[in-house]
Image 1 (cartoon, helix red, strand yellow):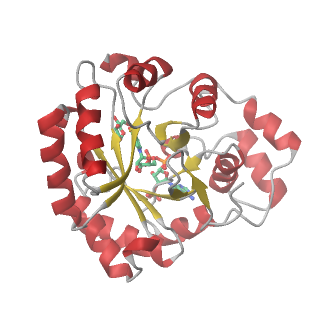
Image 2: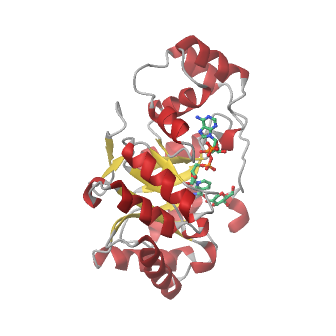
Length: 275
Ligand SMILES: NC(=O)C1=CN([C@@H]2O[C@H](COP(=O)(O)OP(=O)(O)OC[C@H]3O[C@@H](n4cnc5c(N)ncnc54)[C@H](OP(=O)(O)O)[C@@H]3O)[C@@H](O)[C@H]2O)C=CC1
Ligand SMILES: O=C1CO[C@H](CO)[C@@H](O)[C@@H]1O
């Protein structure tokens, strides 16, 4: 169980991954990405989640350097975008991401979406990059059980993480259970449903009960569900607020009330549309 911002999960390859981090989707300006990343790290975050699609890897890399925290204390994730998939393309995309980030090695590289006919070749390239010592761990994002099974049937390396849309309105019971069975760490994207869950009456009531903010209730729930979470904010006070979730506990009534909020409702695409 993660009990502090710095606590880690042990992945299926033995690597330690922070249980909580910063996401930077829609932080389109490098200066803003640089600021958020620097502030997050200064305030104790150790996991940063970007993607080549977010077009801010340069800013993320600068924020990491500005923070002054040593590279081996940080856990940096980026992702290979859909148009970059396939064996040779992935090798090229990885090199380009690393040049933008200005890093010598990457902690976690994810297949961003299970693009039909490509993701197995993408994976082969990622396995090669692990062999070459350029990436510590590889994983996937937006994979359903059938995608994971298909990938693993032809893989030498098992994915360590599956990063999926996950929040009280989309509790992903099936994929969560499969990942738990396979020892693949689930990671939540859009944990706040891009802000849409912050006005939910049930969440607000639980927040009032604990003297916390709605975002903190949702993020604490992620931690309790054993799901790594990466809320995005570009505001320092929210970056701090989002991580201030380790001084209280949700009780059984809270957990039951949040469980009942599930509607299987997405804010992003359904992975089925990629094949
Ligand atoms: N693998 C994938 O396909 C995907 C991965 N992701 C990853 O997941 C991360 C998180 O998801 P994301 O889509 O950004 O959405 P989130 O669910 O993290 O919500 C972010 C929104 O909530 C606001 N917010 C954050 N904290 C608070 C707070 N305490 N109080 C009020 N408002 C708040 C932010 O505004 P403000 O910045 O102004 O504070 C922003 O508008 C992404 O940044 C990205 O790294 C996201 C989508 C898809
Ligand atoms: O990472 C991402 C950001 O969000 C988009 C949709 O909301 C996703 O398509 C993309 O995977």
